[in-house]
Image (cartoon, rainbow, N blue to C red; front, side):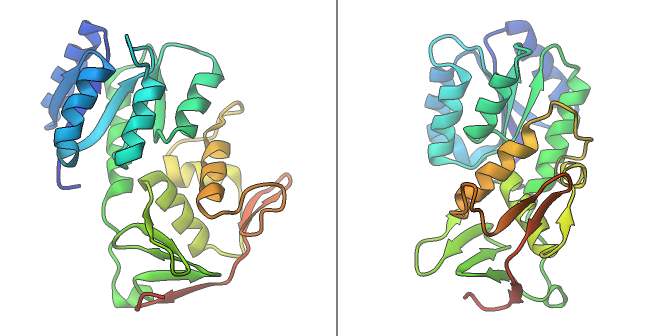
Length: 243
């Protein structure tokens, strides 16, 4: 990513200052906001300068879910949501609204830093060379542009997809026809083991199916293999020229 500016949005002064100090020591530029309204005002003017948002759910005024939704309406900047609620619902709702990851309070700054670095790696531009087979993946009437990170379908306009969705889709495309286990997908995309109650992968698969127009029980592109994982069923071709 070209920018290393992180914005921490949390109404707890101690958490804001702790994270600001820790991340700055690790060579990030950090801005802070105490509420969603002030953050959004600044973000509208400087979105292109922000490389990641750390967003608390429990904010005064607009909550973190609302702020996340408004960010996603104008930007695909990575978002890590903070939650003090142990309930699974908060995490699932955040992911469904487009957050890239979540972390439960209390947490160590070191753990947050590891999550930030992992997300930034996923958002780095893909290195595509002629030996890779081409810049584009073509499957059915869809295509994925690996340089622009856009997903297109037919003659319609292509849409930018987030780092998490891009990485998962590319993983499926590179292993089309193979059954990929849930644990493998979690490790490959998130860099951590899949917990017994972890819904992250389910939400991400659902989100990707929606992007592909492949929702519902009759999913044709990403099929669930009961007790094993998922398989991408379409024929995939790498091409140099835009389909």
